[in-house]
Length: 50
Image (cartoon, rainbow, N blue to C red; front, top):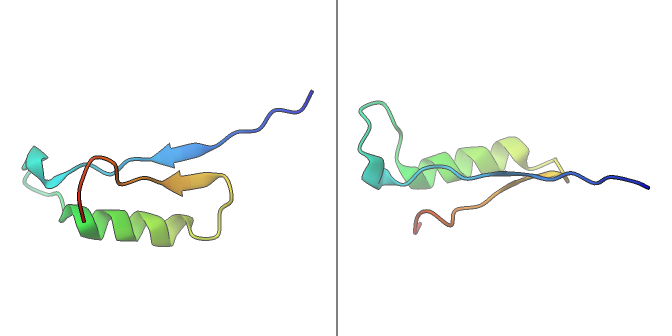
């Protein structure tokens, strides 16, 4: 039996209003760029609208 894994990253929305967070749309884009070459790590922006 072969196991298959996938990691999904969910950056937080701007509504968290934490002092040092970058804007949500930038966070999603940075995460997508960082995982662009991976076939098992994905980014999902379900928590925000960009």
